[in-house]
Length: 166
Image (cartoon, rainbow, N blue to C red):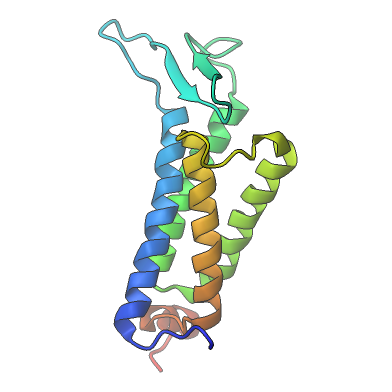
């Protein structure tokens, strides 16, 4: 029995669900990019649960090297927030032309994470931002592959690709 979208409504629901997963990834990354400010204007400690049950990471004060230094990890998290927000829009609008680049970026993130942190695969042991990110990546991957196979794309995508309505 093959998986098929029998109605246009089901296709729209699948696009909405993948957009929710992409926005979940973006929102979970925001937890690492937005410092919590106190009334004095300085950053207060932000604690994120890691994949270990008894371990937390606390970030306090300015980044190493001062406020003017380049924070590569923070920059990457900002890129992730932007990329997954754009990915949500791509799938919501049915822009099939951009499904493959979106999936490649998502697969790159999954491979990078499990390549760099293979011991962090304790998904579902604790609820943490990292587990939400991994859950979002997997949701985007599975539903994205289904949409890549069965979604013909929207009329907007056809108009953007050909420059004229078919």
